[in-house]
Length: 304
Image 1: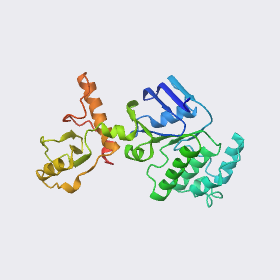
Image 2 (image 1 turned 90 degrees about the horizontal axis):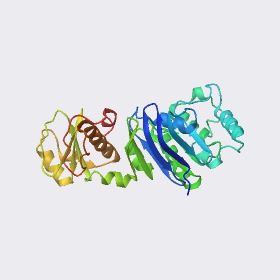
Image 3 (image 1 turned 45 degrees about the horizontal axis):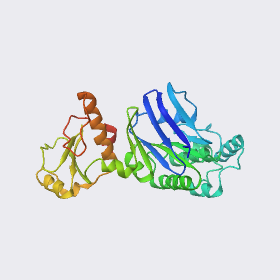
Image 4 (image 1 turned 60 degrees about the vertical axis):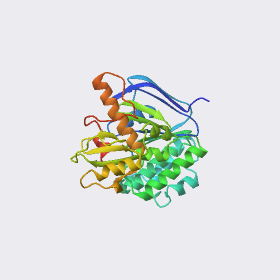
């Protein structure tokens, strides 16, 4: 089956040789910290930015929501939806999506008067007004409260099940783990890895992690992998081994041990990529001990 989106060797701004596909019926999340090239990628897919090299090949109608791309502040939400529907020759947003996004009370309000959560929900609605087969959303839930975030997540599930496919740009890999059928991890414009969330988690070789402040001295605990960052040190292993390691660290207890997430996979893969580039050799295996310099992206450390 022909993918709804094929990105091949794309280069634009920070992006370097980015390639992936989005197939019908799936949610693909491109995840990485701010500055990794996600908005540039969304602009190239939308056609608002010309790539320096490579190809973006959509197959079917595409609806795009860029995070800071709003209609005029004085335009009402209902007017914008009617305008977009007219441009695409559709009947507008189906009633059940209006309900899911809780837009009923917003249709008569101007964009300049919306809260951040209301504005984002309206942006998603505009991306859907043309009845697209592929929907591309640039970090639609970043920083939102639970109510608006949950509504947008429900719409994403609805789209992949009943429309075509969804491609999400997300800052937080842990959020991608919850939403995606497949994840593309992006760092500094390059693809670190692409796979189903469960496969990416499997690369860690550990199901549990203990995070401790970087000022706490950590040696080489048995049966534990160690990754050092600028603000934290991460210990990976089985829960009993991490609880034993915690007992030997001042001010740390086993209650800090938690299951690993896709954010951990990103941190480890990112650190290994930096080590590989610095040493010009094959990357370290994820099942070995990971002791290295401060290579963890600070933007991801803050949310881990």
